[in-house]
Amino acid sequence: MKLPEDPFVLELLPEFVETWIQDIDDQFQPLINSKNSDDLYRFGHTIKGSCFQFGLDEIAEQGIELMGFAKIQDWDNAMTKGNDIRQAFVAAKSVINENLQKS
Image 1 (tube, helix red, strand yellow):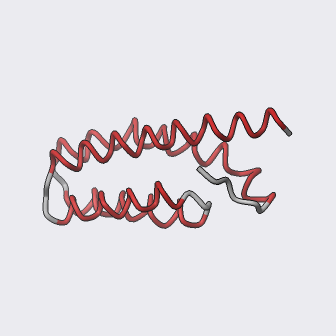
Image 2 (cartoon, helix red, strand yellow):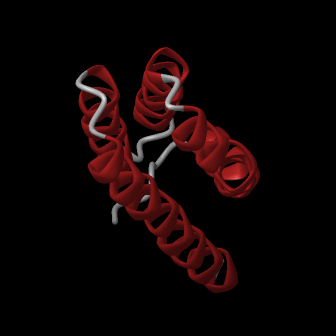
């Protein structure tokens, strides 16, 4: 994972990642359980857009995949992708923390 070079973005990144982990923990499973494809699509769309802005392109791409699963109402793959996205944020948090310790 490559961290963004912009110092302002780097300063905001730890809170951004932590907020997304919490949002996934709080909101993702209810979206799957309710089978609300429109809201799940918006969730994936928000992940995509916000992650591209913060330079987390790999996670943004996973958000696009989640949007696709929501669109076709593929709940099993959406669930798997949501877990993958959460793990990607956890991995990003680890990389960010290592980078902050080096600074």
